[in-house]
Length: 291
Image 1: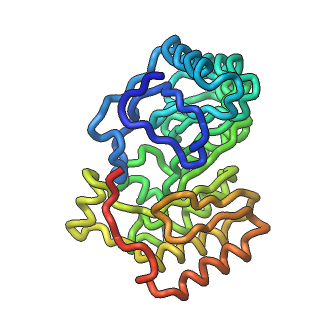
Image 2 (image 1 turned 60 degrees about the vertical axis):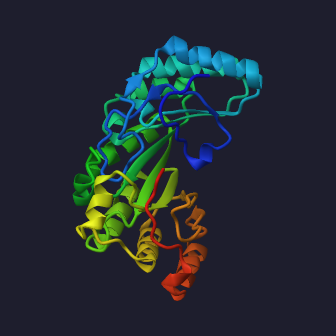
């Protein structure tokens, strides 16, 4: 198999076959992200090359691959016809395949019409990982996310209605001290409108070579304390009114807040409340991310 540039995958795809369908990120402007800032530039790999990599994977791993993840940063940006052809080829090669997954932002997902999304589901695409980050339009604008809250809702709802599983990422503390209330409340409201299958929690860590690290160093962005982050979790979990799975599978988080709503809500709130009773010095220190 051939790979170019940084290859990132969600923790939940740790056991998946990684087949690169795109290179880089077509947006590549988010103020908190360092992954593709130094390139390579975004491109869509030729479908025959991607299929050849799948063929090679079949020779190496055999026919019983259970899941495939297609990097890189925004694979949903490729045409529906191209991605569907790749997914169909994977299903032919791996008859026991259970899941095919991509990253995709609302900016590009919203460009797919309902028929294209249904065609992707019928081809075998099962899940999309999408960075909501925040439901607060001010935060989305200043972090240069490329989509407002309404666009994020529209894109995610279209994917869900087509039959895709949607795994949404929330970055706790992304509004810093100044917009923590708006961040938590607006994010919960947007999640209630989307009703994703998974809500994956991340905690903001300023990354090297990013605009937000520059703002932190100049005092223009005031980092939220560990207790402040935990308060955001409480606001979000209390506010969600739909069945979903909360997942805290990331090294940036202060606590492992993982469970199903609504049944695990009391346990999760008690876990976070216990964290709030601990001194903040118990939690990991501030650090600058390098990956």
